[in-house]
Image (cartoon, rainbow, N blue to C red; front, top):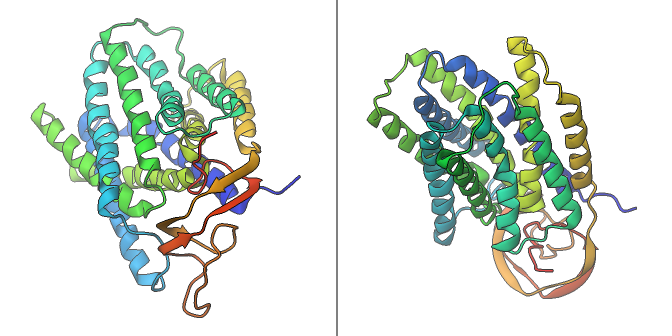
Length: 356
């Protein structure tokens, strides 16, 4: 059996690590909710992600060699970025906030797990991403496992117009994931910084307009620190994973996030584990295994095209030459891909988003 390509392995690690960092945000945010209103908390989580990655950018400029790193966003990329920010950073949270007013918490918690399904459906139908039957099965396994972790049999349940709003919010986040996937080859720090600052500023204005008050500076700092890790760093890793796995598989692996949140909740609040925990763990493990070990190879054709993204010359898609002394191993620049037809294992990464 051939070994998994290094880029694919790293993308899987990025997706799972992003899930862990995002998953721990829920129990920690629960600690802060006694000191800050919900929409205000969301605002500073997003702003924290933006400001945190601005700091990362400053550090990168100090230590990176000239020409090393990531491709810059172009004017054409801004359309995708604006759409992703509007869908996932503005419309999704607003619809969710108003929908939660008339929706039982248990129902909302269950329905929010359908983001990964929405992401996969949009990826397959709209963006023609290859999603195999094995991948569909794995994604559904992880989604059902996440639902099991969120089920509270003793809570009030009910389906209403507000519940449809929760589904709509999940759909918008699925759209956000796909739109971001179209620019995932570009600098993830810039992408997440812009999304965080834009979404955070909008949420802050929304919070103030509905009468929420600014908390103490210490609480703001705590929220921003949490946002910089669980939103900023997490989403940056998510964007990197999109490059190598595509939107559907990245979203599927990211759906394991509730597991890390549950584990941290057990430690922080001494909560009793849900009786369905072991079943959910088994289903997540099976689903993750199926995604991680997916193999897909067939003869495929690459037309000639020119683009700009971070790359090295260790794969079969970058055979142009550089000055070996002046060029770092990982670098970004506009480069030409010649027409080629070949066969090797691949997923819907940056260079393999062809139809099947």
